[in-house]
Length: 183
View (cartoon, rainbow, N blue to C red):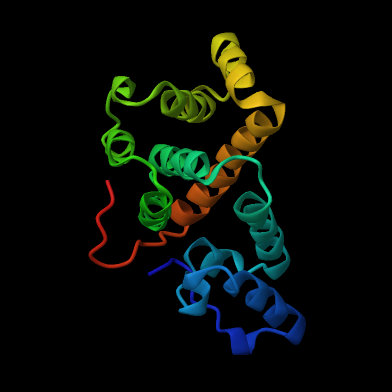
């Protein structure tokens, strides 16, 4: 249950129903009427549309590999305490092949020593950005060397996007699906 009432598609203008339909086309929560963060954002359809467009870029057009993207999202969701995002993306991470040990390490705020060097770098980027609001020179140099410019920019932007998603989920108390393990 969210702090805001659920928006019904039928109550929206035709233009905003089109926004709903674009968002629901790739998001199960909207199709099921629960919506997750978009159940909140649809209260401002133009904003929901733009947030979804950014997320769609990451899903369909980013150069960042799916495995990397899902690990970054999990690390950001965990740092933000965003349980709904964790549940949705833990399942997705497993589907695309994120190592179970990496998922459990992030869930437990465990030692990064159990991660591969690449996984560790991705999680360190998230931690640095969300804890200190910057990348140290050492992390930046490693990230630029390993990821390259395009993937580094995408990684930083993805962390920012899931910062937004985490804040929306937490501020409006969007609960994960019942009986879903989180952290």
